[in-house]
Length: 238
Image (cartoon, rainbow, N blue to C red; front, side, top):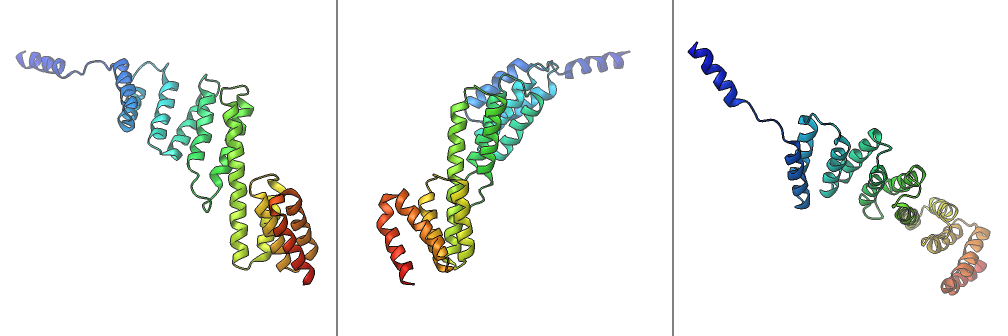
């Protein structure tokens, strides 16, 4: 009898107190304020696992995504924001999550000589934000980042065109420049694209195309008029 009573008392003594989700959430929020993102994430995930109240699951998913973003782990953050959208597409914070998916890709943009894939993702995800959540508070920012990413891609195309030109691959250089001029008219890279297109066509013996590009350069960019005219005179002497 004594052994049974001892066992029962021991079980009571070792029984864990009920999980306090409110206190854990408060502690997680405090960790977020202090930029201790890993500690905050562990708390949020603990609440997801242990709390019987599932009414805050959406908030917790978003907070976990925010911890990755705070740590500058943008690929992981984008995955978590997208997971939130998959489960809660009509949630009041869905526009924020969609915006963060796009911004996470923008943060992955490095130097102009690197893969431009994140720029295409920014454009796609910001357009998705505009289509799915029109009149959201992020409308203006979405348009701004679409413009920034578009310029980035045009700059990348120019970078590649210059690379091909300098290594003597004039056909590839001309092709890149012509693609830029068609796809991104008015981009800041347009001026140099016209110039290098003219040079590349000249090297290929395509005098008429070269003249067209240098004439366009002179007409659209008066500051480049003397440079363009010098190239036109050079073509006429060939």
